[in-house]
Every structure is written in C-alpha cells, then in structure tokens.
Image 1 (cartoon, helix red, strand yellow):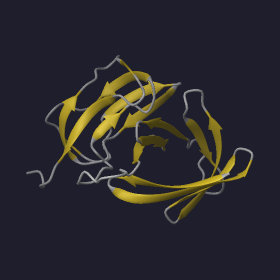
Image 2 (cartoon, one colour):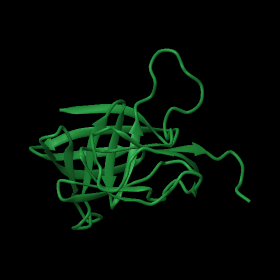
Image 3 (cartoon, helix red, strand yellow):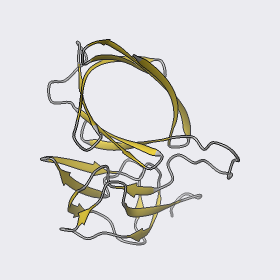
Image 4 (tube, one colour):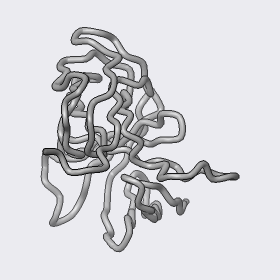
Length: 174
C-alpha cells in the first residue's frame, strides 16, 4: 500500500509520499527527506507515528488528526497544519497557513498564551490543549496579529474547532 499527496504548509507546496514496508512499518518521503516510522491507528481517526532509525529520538512522536481539509500533525512538541490544496476555482491568496489555530482533536484547553491585538511569531505557541494524556502546543503557522480568541482555559473543544485567529502582518512591526 502506498499513496502520494500534495499539501500546503504555510502556503508552500509539500510533496508527501508514503509506502508501507511491512506491517506497521512505513517509509515516508517529505520533499527530499526520507523518514521511517511505525504507525498505529487511533480510535478517533488519528494516527500515532513513532520514528525509526539512527535519527529518531526515543521520546519523539507525532500525532495527526484530520480537521476539515487540514491534517494536523504533532512533531517534537509542536503541532503543524498541512492544508490540502484547493480544488476547482482558485480563491486567490495562499490557502495554507491561514492563521486559524484549530484543535487537532477533542480535548481540554490548558493554556491560552495570547490575547487580541498581540503580535505573534509563526512558530509561537498560542494555545495548549490536552487530549489522550498528551499536551498539544498549537501555533498559527503565520506571523501576525491575534484577531480573535474563541476559547478559554478549561473549555472542552471539539476536533477541528477554531480556537484563535491570527491576521497576517504585512509590514514589519515597529
């Protein structure tokens, strides 16, 4: 079994090709980099991914959960969003890295580290959600200004729910 798919990460096209080697052992090519993983399906439709080989760190795991047309993947303590490219008519502008922070799975909000009007970096943790005994540090994927926060500490959020919206900052902050 194998598949090949194109995603957008922060508006940049990313080719992903996955091939099952044997059982739960997969070889995945992301751009020019090749990685080997053990993958196990989770009950909520996500996949737990554990890297193999000399470059793998024992504690490094990834967790992906599909949310609409995005696939959220947790790697090394950060959650990144891979957006499926738009099909049909283009709407203009980059469709990846849209600045909307979404819950990768149903869970509880542990922390909200921003407020409306804050200037944030693309890789800055904005919200921390706990689910299945794992903490997910969520980022917007774009630098900009926090436009809206739709969640509070202690709230239960559903998979794919919009938590924070960041508006792209076109000019350098003063």
